[in-house]
Image 1 (tube, helix red, strand yellow):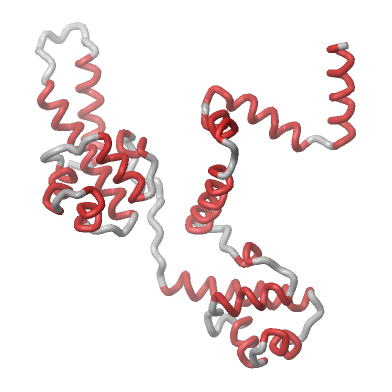
Image 2 (tube, one colour; image 1 turned 45 degrees about the vertical axis):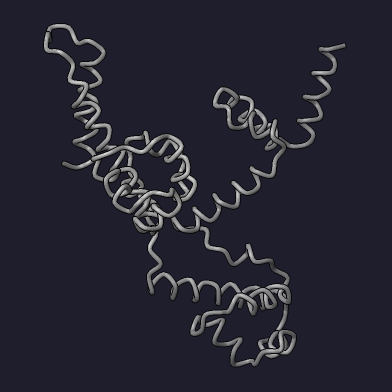
Length: 249
């Protein structure tokens, strides 16, 4: 039985729990609990596999045995909320993932670092380096001398023939007037994930009242209004401010 089947059966059980008319059969709580446990187990395993963690890894974090975690994944037993909170933190998923009805795999969140991806990214980074170097008006020899590297190394980097070590990329970026964000992936699921993590980092650095305001779904209208205002030309914002001032006076 797959996750969709479990979700469908649980939905039917919930409808019956709500009291469907015309059906006098008593509600089967045991079956409902069993289905909920199975669904939670699928979501736990899904998050663990997506995070490339073993049963032993999760067991060590939670202070339980690998057999305990495996029992959770098969729905034979069920963890407590505090255990799920620790697991969500460790596996880098929202706690709400564990009471949702969509797996990470179904959402396309799994990311595999394949050789083809690495080679493609090396070529892309090399092309960006060459573009930035030419934009800065520097030759391969000039950039090589500035970074204490050989012109052959610069050529190999720009052609994507050799992966650029991070410490070399940092120095090269500074000499062509770019920061590291210029070279970051932005078009794939991995790039999206990295960008989201950067945005989350900035979000957590906001003052707590602002974080609480932004995290409250009822405030989405205010946030959308702030966004629209941020896109308006300065002269229109100025006129709007003057109009509001006239109203309050």
